[in-house]
Image (cartoon, rainbow, N blue to C red; front, top):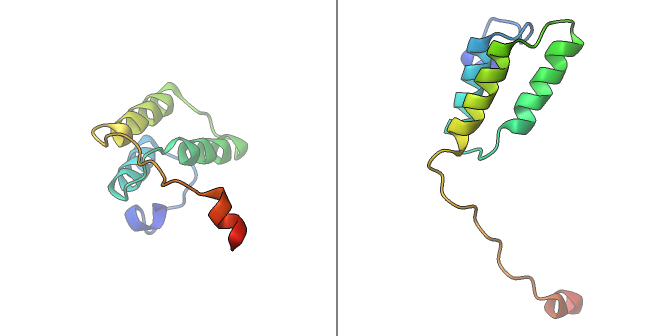
Length: 88
């Protein structure tokens, strides 16, 4: 994702623009929940010795809300008939 938006830049240190671009790319790709990705990049950012600021927190929250906006209900998986599975 990072390479698609920021070809020649390092991932870390993270910037608010990089976080916003990541959120937008995940939303465009149809991801319903980007929280796991934000959590992972936050972990790596802090582990590398950088601060997780209020601006990052706000962008992460806004990106997550944006990704969930207007997507409707989740798709229910079909029934799984255990007796039919046992016959396989």
